[in-house]
Amino acid sequence: MSEIAIQVKHLDKMYKLYNKPSDRLRETLGLKVPVREHYALRDVNFQVERGETVGIIGTNGSGKSTILKIITGVLNPTAGEVTVNGRISALLELGAGFNMEYTGIENIYLNGTMMGFSREEVDARLQDILDFADIGDFVYQPVKAYSSGMFVRLAFAVAINIDPEILIVDEALSVGDVFFQAKCYRKFEEFKKMGRTILFVSHDLSSISRYCDRVILLNKGVKMEEGSPKQMVDMYKQLLVGQDPAKAEENKETQKENWSEQFQVNPNMLEYGSKLAEIVDFAVLDENGLCTNTIEKGSSFQIKMKVVFHESIQEPIMAYTFKDIKGTEITGTNTLFEKMAVEHSEAGDTCTVTFRQDMFLQGGEYLLSFGCTGYKDGEFTVFHRLYDACNITVVSNKNTVGFYDMNSKVEIHYGEKV
Image 1 (cartoon, one colour):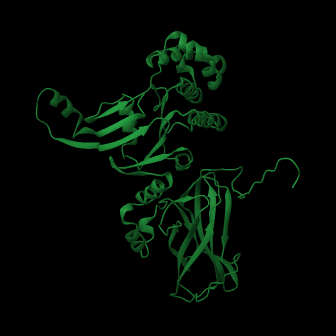
Image 2 (cartoon, rainbow, N blue to C red):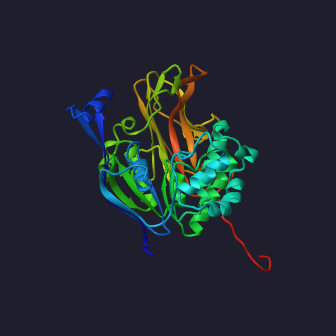
Image 3 (tube, one colour):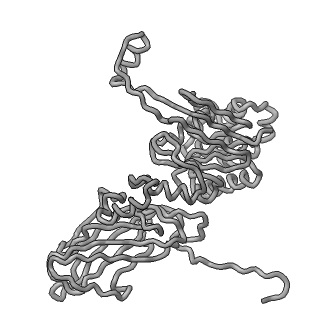
């Protein structure tokens, strides 16, 4: 049996873009109409070896899902070829092969037949599918009567319990409630331990870092590079803020003057205050000194804010706060807590404050806020606050319980007590 599970050679996918819907019909009638060619993929080459877990990452519109649809036969390529050695189960658009008028049981057999299984082979897997989906007697009802949660649970259970040689996953490990998600991830880990081949597309960089042996980076339909998860995530972070990963040193130079132009900022942030002092710029820098909205757990990073004083201010205080996406404050600090007095706060002065720390928040999405407060004429005053100024994604390959990782070191001794 071949050691190559998936081979992609010189793959192109081109779509014709028409000025109006009727132009498509006119072209089929042989009439000449204006057409623009858009390449979703352009000369993409890679291979996945048997037993590997390979991730594909890239910005929106980079062609990630298009590749998976071509590999699974949902789309035909414009040029190039794809060779697959092994039975595939695909978690793309969950439930895409379901008939809404059929019951859950009937859809299980329908999907099994589409994948080449006999009724007896589906019978042997049926109980595992039902146990995994855990939707009770609803499995005997038409799928059109299901809630969205029940629908994705059954679709996922069918796809992942068919026992494929190759598993194709597209943003499908976060379906259902948190307990079902945990079950999905356990099954995913079982597949890895069994030596199955997995091709995995996700925006969840923590999952990419945790599960993948190798990662392929796409940008605008072109394969930029492939390598270790850390290398590719670092390059991807630069793409997210419009930087060319091949020009890392130039990126560091250009960002010194214009942080906000190279950093994803929330256009709907809440700001208020007297603006006697004003936060005019801010940024987050990773351990390599690059502006980014993505920080790797366990790494060092900086938070910077620049303040302009429009009047003389007594004892200004600079602060930042991390919140989760539900609005709960997780952590933060300020120059007062850190016993760092801000001096030279006369009218016209500019002050840049840099907070340096290590990231030990759990992997996930957070919101970062900034503040400048202090005393004016003996009264505590809010000069300027920026709430939810930007999002920060923490990438982690090991999460613990709660918001914060205590970074524990574990020792285990057998026999006599130590």
